[in-house]
Length: 95
Image (cartoon, rainbow, N blue to C red):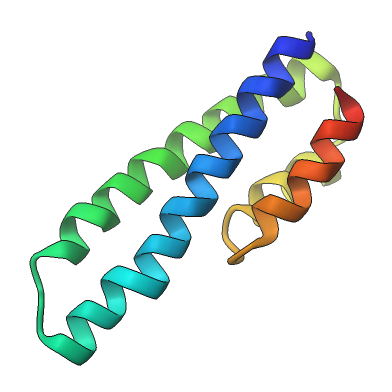
């Protein structure tokens, strides 16, 4: 079971980084510098990583018998910039 949380933590970090890249690199390039080509690529990558993260967190939640509230907090952390890094500490404590 420890391996599942380790994989989830890694997925959370990668997904969190993709959100930060989208918000703080791709979007400014689009709106300040007119580079419209990067947002679809980074956005699609982030979307796929988000779906994988939600599915993986659901699987881990069922295996670890997490409450619905804790699982919702894990998923919500992937929607708030930098929150996945905070959530990583909580997940590390569970490992």
